[in-house]
Amino acid sequence: MFDKKIYQERRSSLKKKLKSGLVVFPGNNDIPFNSTGNTYPFRQDSSFLYFCGLDFPGLWLFLDIDENAEFITGKTKTLEDIIWSGGCNSLQETANLSGINRIIPPNKMHEIISSAVKNGREVHFLPQYRDDVRIQLSGMLDIPERKLDTRVSIDLIRAVSNLRSIKNREEILEIESAIDISREMYLEAMRLSVAGVSESDISGRISGIAYAKGRGLAFQMTCSIRGEILHNCRYRNTLKKGDLLLIDSGVESSLHYASDITRTLPVGGNFSLRQREIYSIVLSALNRVVEMLKPGEKYISCHLEAAKIIANGLKNLEIMRGNMDEAVAAGAHALFFPHGIGHLIGLDVHDMESLGEEHTGYNSRIKRSDQFGLSSLRFAKELKKNYTLTVEPGIYFIPELIRKWKAEKHLSEFINYNNAMEYIKFGGIRIEDDVLITDTGCRVLSRDIPKSIADLESQAG
Image (cartoon, rainbow, N blue to C red; front, side, top):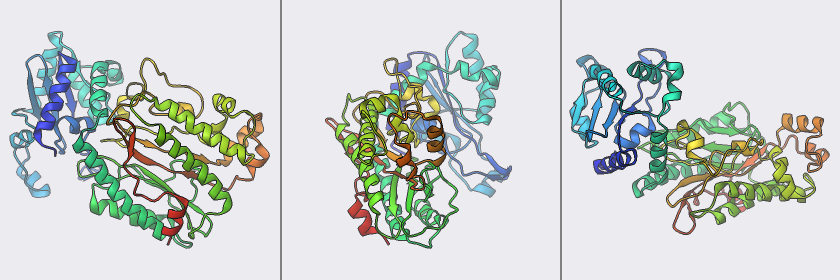
């Protein structure tokens, strides 16, 4: 945990933003894997962690703004619990770690919430993503579970988003500690990327580094020579000389802050000419976006700039044609770049995704597009100092998508389908770094993980 003063300051800031009402933060529970005694690894809710840092199942946090009261509820461990999972602090001692002096028994939660509702007070809660917590909360609020999402507090979502988006020094250090582990993983992956090695061997070995040094993986890793499949987590192939191995992975730090890095590696040590050409376009897009990043810059502008660089690069290879500004406006580039340029990162690898990207990534001035490709941009609004986010351009040749668009002659004025078909077995290239927005620009936090063509070829096994 951080020092308890950090959590106290966060709760104080939240209460000032909301001004009144009762705020309820349900913590997560242990979830059965295939029987009640065999559970998935526990992961605490990120907003609960942000405001009190307590990384144990079965806890709820309450902030009574009108009474200026803070309390935690949870089950006290029985002797049987201690026998099976070990001793721990009392619930009061646990709450004290977060600077909270009051605890209440779980059977009083419904009474406290019901009293607030009866007295016409606002009960603030966030969107819930776990069914067990949704059922608990709907029972506490006497709201049918199917209607729970209609009653979430927009004011709380906005307040939490504003607070969590700005990272303090301690949080940045946590993200950097996760990136340090990612660097070890990628250096090992570069050594292992030789013909005859399986995807499962590489993914397993570098996952082991994450589990040995941190909390493990922040999300299910992509590790595949089929890089055109954006989230390819199957690890079924064996590497051959001349393949491209795309690895997209992230680590959780000891306090659950995430890294999220992608590198595309040449199997056997050298990129082919065609691979170099595509890789250079993607790297140019990443470097240009990094140059643009600064407070006040709209991230959607960075996305569109990357799209234009990718489109012009593909035009130079005669895969695209025509006016590339018009091509990007029409969405033709999305045949090869169908996702967003990046997203916020923090306690969640897609930070605060459960709160809704319409609140965390967009606002009243910048609305989400429904255009293919651009609609997948998770974060579009203005950047602020101490935002942490990813930059991850890519070029992919997705056979099914190319064939579909070709058959429909979709945007054929901008796409040379005959030449695109020559790349049908190419795969995909993505390069992803984690960055911190500074006073006047940005700092690439993952700069020490090799990504130039020369560095990748020199690191190859």
